[in-house]
Image (cartoon, rainbow, N blue to C red; front, side, top):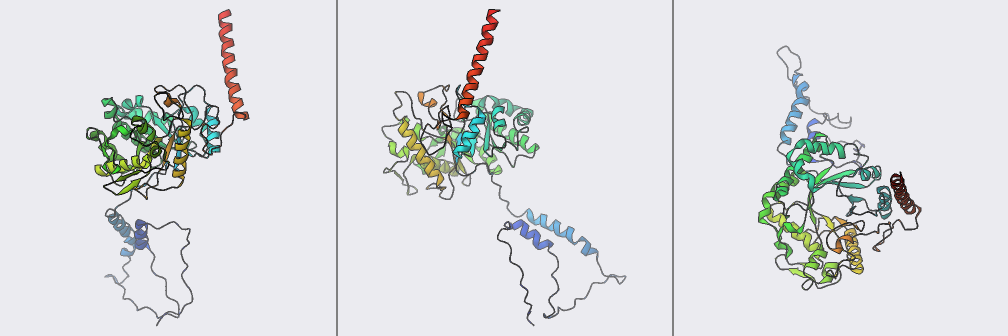
Length: 447
């Protein structure tokens, strides 16, 4: 007889979290026995109860049922593939590198205000300066801190030094300072120091193990950025491969990152590629301006800008190495607004054009021709012009902002203008400190 009850089981809330395969299996195993049917339904058939020799119902199996089912669940769990949890170390698609090789920058507290006004939520620094870590407390900004190249060998050789570094630079600040990543070194592979290349993997593992000991390895990503020097070929994009001589160093890192779910960081600079061969590279292709672009004959994919071509060359290299599922994330990209006489591409107009087009492209939250479903994320280089950097003149002119906090490139950002009271305040403070130190020196010499 069909059931005529008017009661309908409630539908699950649309706001409820999704049920995974593992939780569904556990729910099935541990679900309670079905409730009795309504009175209007046909009664179930009576079941014969198992009887023990003493004539009492056998309830021992019932008592053991939850334990047995849990044991079965964990046995079955071992046969189900588990997905590696991805790090949420990047909000949105746009971030910035906060370099501080300069003697005229605002204090970190003012920089935090600048970043908040510009609505830049992802920030990478090149060390673990405690004044910066303090300034970022309760700011709501994601911060990637770094281990300089000079510390990599020691941390690789001695796990206790990795623990000491984490105890000194992470533990006192996290989570009020939202440290989301530790970057180990910068552009180590492809350089001239073989010993440093050999130490890189050990340093990455030791830092990760130190975080795991503090139960932070699932919350703080460990990674290392690479320059274009790690590639053997990168043109056309589908021909991207890593240098064979670097694979002994790269493969352990790639194996490790594939297990932790970390992305592959690459510094992608169309500016540097254009400067290396301005006669054969269309500047419009490098600047993301309208141009004929290139056609990759192997994939039949069209590229209208070098930035996407560089990223897809990285994806091709990862695929050729056996890591087709790994995400590529851009750790540095930018364009210089000035430079030496031998750097004709380094102009204010070109810098604004590249950064404007790049920001617009990132805000579209789309992928590349080869990986259309992988949203591109990038750290822009850099937040400020850094007047103490060495090398070509262009090295000192990558900033989105001037040292006084005003806008250097008109990209729609809001900056701390030169007329703001905060900027006046830190300038007066610096002037007062200089005047006070000069007074002490004068008094010391006159006594």
